Every structure is written in C-alpha cells, then in structure tokens.
Length: 270
Image (cartoon, rainbow, N blue to C red; front, side, top):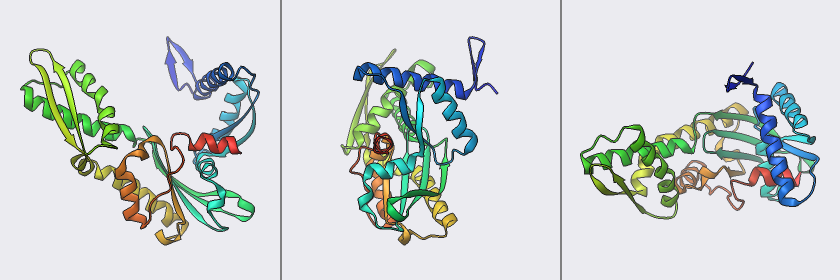
C-alpha cells in the first residue's frame, strides 16, 4: 500500500527508503571521490522478515549490494567495543532519538557473538517531546510578560524553533535565557532553569524506564543482571537521562562513543 502521495503520485515506504539510500550513496561517493557498491545496513531490532526483505529491495533499487543487515542495538554494542564484556553478559541499549525510543537487551555469546534477546519501544516518544515541554514553558512565560496571545501559527513556530536550542544549552548550563521579538510588544526575555526543565519532563523519563523494566521482565532478568547500559541517540546527551539511569541501575551508563554515530560506527566495524 502507498505510504504517501506526492503531487498525486503514490509512493511505498520501500520506494522512499530506496530514494534515501541512493541519496546517501551519492553523497558519500561525492565526499570520497570513489564508487560505493556494497553496504552493511542497520535496522531496528523489531524489524522482522518482511521489513528486512523490503529494506533489501530498497538497497537494490539504490544500486547497493547488501553484505549484511544487523540490528541497530547490536551495531551500537560493537561500536562501544566487545572487549568490555565477558561471555553471557547482558547489555541494555537505551536508544532515545528525536522521535522514537527503544530499549533492547543484547546478550554476549561465545566468541563475542552478540544477539538481541528482546526489545520494546515507543515510536511516538523522543527528543521532540522534551522540546514541546520547553515550548509550552516559553509560550506561557512570554504570554505572561507581553499580555499577548501567542498561540498563532507564526508566533508558535518562532518559539518552537528556539525550543531545541534551549534544550541543548541546558545540557551544559544551569539556566538559559530566551529572547524573542513580538509585533505589538517588542523584545521579551525569560529564563528556564535546568532543574525545572528536569522536573517538568520527569514523566517522559519514567516512560522510558517502564519500557526498560518491561524488557528485563520479558527476559526473566533483574536490574542486577545487566552488565552495562549503553546510550544511543542524540537525546541521551541530556544530563537528566544519565542521572535517571544511574538511579535506576545503580551505575553510570557507558557513553564514551558519540551517541549519534554509535550505530553507524558499529556497522562499519561489521
């Protein structure tokens, strides 16, 4: 079935994936000055035979020969280094991206072989939800300061645009000032403290924690059975994520690999 229509033309998800892979292939070839024929492709752990077959078809349409398809959490664990864990170690991969969250339990078998035990996710939970909370806080404060109704598309879009920047700055600062100009008022300034941001978004963290606990319960394991927690996805840069996982698991998560690149680096190692 078509995933969407563009200018009246139907496109399947497989076709769209092929367009994206071809674009990546061409961009990489331009950067390297070389031809790329082969690929290792990572997919979510919850992709089963139909989704993987569709991914293979998309790659072929993009002119790529697929050497291997591997799970994203397995790739991330490879990037962190297999030497970290002994045989039979259980590793929880905590993947918080911009729009999705996945918790996956990976097991270290004989000879450094990694396998996915179980995975749970929320494909409507991600960094954008944290942005939305900041957006609400900013709108409320700017409205209080200006006396204006700022819920119109133009004003809301302007504030939405600064929300992600405020979030990123809060990762390294305890307080962030936000300044905006509004027609009919002029310049308005407000501040957001990291502590209030953390308190305002704690329920979102709890949603990720519930999925982590569900993964362990499904595998018949407890928190003490997890050797390490790996951070994947740009949204794990928020200090509140590390602090939360420290409280839940009693140890700091591993984060010495760029969380945005961990999956791709693992695929490159493969």
